Image: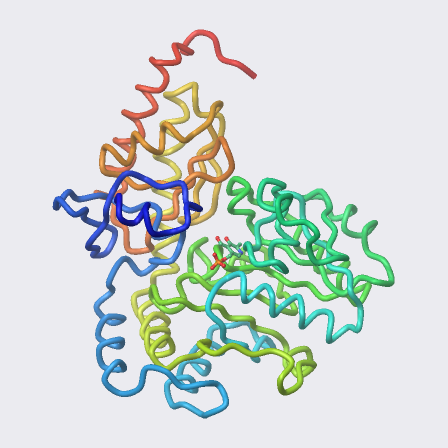
Length: 398
Ligand SMILES: Cc1ncc(COP(=O)(O)O)c(C=O)c1O
């Protein structure tokens, strides 16, 4: 821990644990202690850690060809994009491969400006789209934005969950509306039914692109392959990343063909994006997701997990609300959650925060009931400890 602290930028809120190994929903620390992982590296390891198909694909490809710039054709890249386009909604069939969620958003913003010839992007208050300058400009939280002003101009934010706010904000300058179908970082906030459909209609009516940031909500996470499928809408552009290469770095911007063809040779590129190694892992990852019916499993396990969290809500007054879809779950507390998260780590369960007061659970789709029970039992204990320390059982604020 000390060496990492000494030689790396101090930008992560570190948990006091050194992880060295993982398998499925479990990880182990340097002392061999076992943890249930409901954080999956912030939503990357959706297949569980070291899925055997992904490991085998990486091993085989590493002996063939690791890197191959986009200016050359490559067999694995072709296989990957074909597999990917087979699972994307009809019409969304042109992709740009990069290396992270933020990069997939950068490409989407450039694409929207180039395709429409307009500049303005409308994003949502509370949104999180990454921390590179373009993506950061669409991210809402001022603690991320303010130290780095001025940001990319013509990106404005409107209140979420009210389609009229979007209708009012759209002007002749508007190129696109950019949003997460379920807002993850700002607290696992599921929109009201009808909202996304209405936004889709407004965008079509006003000839504004709808860009959905599916970086956290795709790959079966919410019980559907893509989060927006919970509301039967289709975006014009979508941003993918985290789990699509089984744990290797990937970003994917997917668009309709007419939109993607707005980008001409040289107007956008990346050195590493679409490497054979990442694409081989991606083929295996999509293969495992589909063949092992993990999307359906996420819906089923998500119901079980959510019901267990609701049981904790009924038991602990410190819990204000339980939210989420599939295996993207949030438990809002009446207080700051950092203590709860650190106590859970100490009891061998890894969970995330989302904003100041929400415990976010992003377990792998392969988690089983026994592992969910272990996580829930630890949260039960930790919430009990927090409650007795705060002595709030009889006097609840709000
Ligand atoms: C919705 C969303 N968009 C974009 C990003 C940025 O992804 P990355 O950290 O890979 O750049 C994240 C990361 O958590 C995210 O949740």
